[in-house]
Length: 112
Image 1 (cartoon, rainbow, N blue to C red):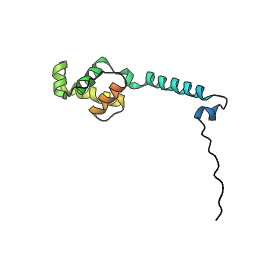
Image 2: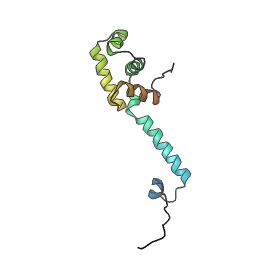
Image 3: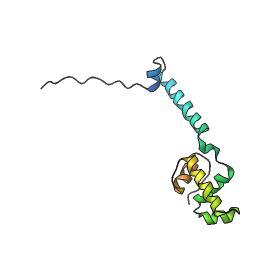
Image 4: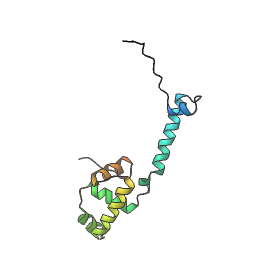
């Protein structure tokens, strides 16, 4: 049985792999700028006022019929908006849509 000494492992950030002269502070700054750009370009940032209202009402537990009645639109229109909202927020359920919209700052929800 051959026993060898363990070799030390060096962790290298992505920016160090690309450009070794960058410091860790530079790496943090690049990551921060990249995440800010993602927020700006995120499709969810383009939710219309009507879509934001529908997500807000979903968050208040309203059904499609109740939302339709409140906004004076057809229930099928609410379903159409919901599908578009789910696509933009990359979610599959109403609860996920409300959570993601709140996390992105598109709606404000209060916990009672």
